[in-house]
Image 1: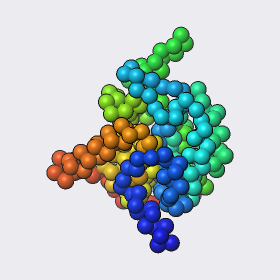
Image 2: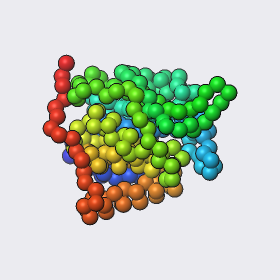
Image 3: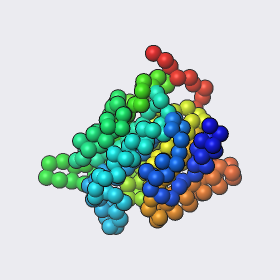
Amino acid sequence: MQAQHSIQNRFIDTITHGDCIEVMRQMPPNCVDFILTDPPYLVNYHDRQGRTLPNDTHAEWLKPAMAEAFRVLKNNRLMLCFYGWPRAEKFLEAWREAGFRPVGHLIFRKSYTTKATDFLKYQHEQAYLLAKGRPPMMGSPLPDVQRLLFTGNKLHPTQKAVMSLVPVIRAYSLPGDVVLDAFCGSASTCAAALLTGRRYIGMEMDAEYFLAASLRLARIYARLESGKVRVAADGPRRRRHN
């Protein structure tokens, strides 16, 4: 037990450079409180600068990664996972085979168009809320339509705004909880966890994005130490049991 605890502590409040499957395999089971992650959508995405995402052209990693995510998540807890709608069936299959149960679906509305086709303008992102076991309520339910602020994607081609993730983290975790992002990109989830009084575990396999994420967290820590930014944790709150 003590050895497992030391292994877990090695990852807390750090971003690890590596394949998330291999990194999570080093973690003990049932050791994180909430997962908020934005994996590749399996669509071979290229942004306007030609930037790409690792493993975005195939799904071999998807089931092993979700199986490990399920294993390290504590019982009766939640994962919010973004996904790409053209490959929704692959994600749902991977989640269900891992043991997750879909309990909700969120839309993150944009104020801008990221892509236009003959039929639609793309103005939202989507994510499933997935349960391991029977999680209790943690206060008022979160509206299933949220606002996704524009970041400019300076650090990462699919960079999420920290302030768009803060309501999710506050809704589905408590201050002091450990929040995992196995595909952390530029570390938006880690930053949101830190700024709301949670602990975080991040993983990123791309060297360039890992460096950007590490430097970003270093800047946030520096601003916290200088007093320019403060942690805004929630007030006292207990999980509501049905």
